[in-house]
Picture (cartoon, rainbow, N blue to C red):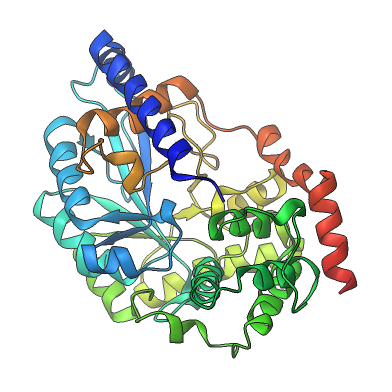
Length: 390
């Protein structure tokens, strides 16, 4: 396991760097440049949770923001930025704006989007968009990363994380893994390894982890307290009637570069149809699950009739950006707070404007297509082979 000290050191170094950028005026300069050029930085959120739920959720760390942090962020955006609605027919690209422009988006359709985030955004007049998966609406533990975290926590309580990791790699062996590439893993690192697999291999690995703990297939709910649920359709319809824009995040949230072409086509086109039938309005916006896309996936999104599609990598949105590869910046609690654990405007400016300015462009098809090549790394290839053999 990584000791707490290196994490603290990294956090301190990061804060010293942010403080330098602020004191030198470079943060201000980057933000001013983005505003002067009329560029848009699209923000990605997933969950906004009260303190009690923030501590209980099984969502990975990089997906959650505390309610008080989001409220302070919303105040900051309302005062110092121009929030751009994505539901309109067209956007103006007039340069020399007085304030930097941002767009707020949420992925997955979690219940707290309606109960916690919406009142905050509504009270400050901030437009926002939620990308939903129709087949995951109104469900507990609808996505597999939360199930993995729940399994991991159950294994920690029982002192059998080694058994869980052994099952993850080689099948449901009762003996802990002895060193090797799985030594020192965390729930988050296991999730990232699972994302490298095909959808079938991912399901197989999680199934074996579940079996290693003697858990039923639906046992995830036993380890949570129903904090991890998505909105009901009635809540979505109510938000839509109050001005929230809804887009598609596929039918069931597969990583589209890891599934067959025909399945990707069904997920992309089918989700658009399902949302339009439920909300009785056109669904124009799409977000790639996990931000992963390729030239073929991009073309499927365009052919399905969407007008804009969003990735999940820092960058800026300009008139010249490929409208089916618009970059977004993911925000979570750790990216928004200072050393005292409270919302920091300069941490926000760094995570949003400095990173976007430094990146400076949308991701390219070529850079995204490199991601599947990770499967050719010896460790990933060996793991995939062993999984299939067991």
